[in-house]
Length: 169
Image 1 (cartoon, rainbow, N blue to C red):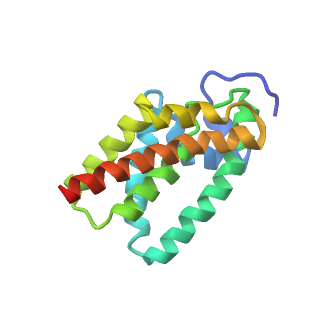
Image 2: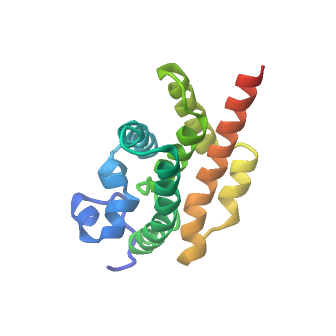
Image 3: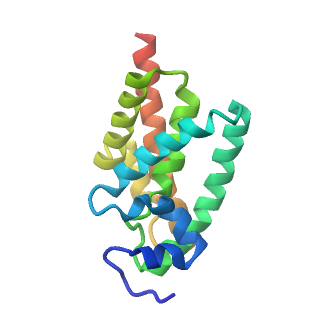
């Protein structure tokens, strides 16, 4: 793969390498508008399906393994796209939102929807600690690949903090 920047990856790019398929959220990142939101919606749906078959401990193991595999996939895909943090890479949203649901469940539909809205707010607006995290690991290589994931994990933490305060009060 060349390192020339692609503005928007194609289905051909998605299928050209296993890392692309993972990093682009099995195709969710190809959405022409709001790929991060589409990736988060895919994460929500896939979590609800996975929790039918997996215990909470197994789901935690899936999230941990998906973080490590995602680190590799995001690193490779960013390098192949020639962009340090491509918008089409949505695996960071997937894994981070899985973590939110894993730690905040059980919740009904409306609670899950609020969690999604909070997560999208923190991920997109990048207030305070999320903005700090977004600027911490920039560039290509393993450091940059981790940076793609890191700010979403901080957004997940902020989401969980708001949910915890909401439940407390």
